[in-house]
Image (cartoon, rainbow, N blue to C red; front, side):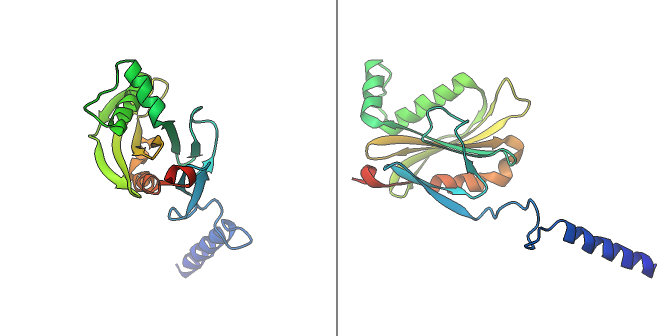
Length: 199
């Protein structure tokens, strides 16, 4: 019995040693989810993203910022449009709702665009807030793509800047929502204007 205990202890220690790199860190250990890096985009805005997400160009052709971690199924993009041309275009199409503000119209348009691409299976109400002094709204939704077996969960945050309106969109597989939702919230809450957009 004593011999088996020593053998189990030895194998356990050996396993720990084999799974560490020469510097003493566990191999493939995920970065601390509390570690965020701030990314400045042009002379317009900044956003803090978890260290485990890396820059990409594969998510959205019109995004100002795109970050992902394909292993953790974590994705974030930021879209932005100049306010005046957006209002002019919608007004010219007779689609601008004068009873709503610019941000609310932008939210409606973006949700309509998303609904044209995916089957939205659940959608929460828009929740108004302020992010670093800016008017904002957040909508959560679940959606099914035809090409995927699993549903996706999205957190969309719409933010009104001085000259631009923005959407911070983060998403993951629905069954990973619990482990990433607070992180997605922290990403959106970190949004802040810089440079020309602050004037």
